[in-house]
Amino acid sequence: MGKTGRATKKMDEPLIFRLIGRFLTPTTFSEKTCDFIANEEELISSVKRRAAEKFSIIGSQRWFCKGRIISDSMTVKQCKIPDGFVIQVIVSPPITTETRNL
Image (cartoon, rainbow, N blue to C red; front, side, top):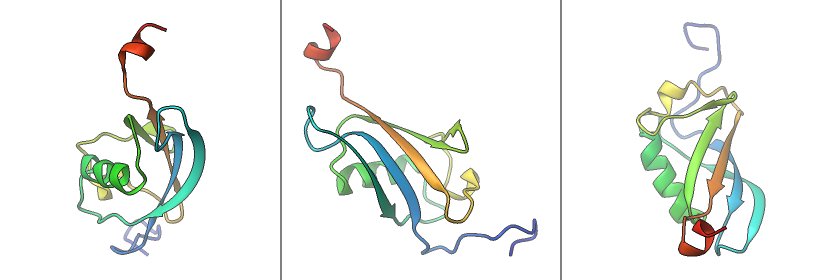
């Protein structure tokens, strides 16, 4: 346990991300839960890029922890994510001329 009495994450312990949004193609919608390993000192923007590559995410990502949006400029450690907590990831489709005209 850390100094605050809360359990702390180990460097190689996977963070669990719940990915919600469009994947693989602009017309496919799916919801899935995926394990993803992130270093405590890594910026959220970097983790988002890696997640996009690994899970073929098309579009922009918004990440939430405990109901609050997680800033791209924060590190994983700064987010203070509790052990076993699920990060909610909302994926919005990229803006195209088709979606702009809706």
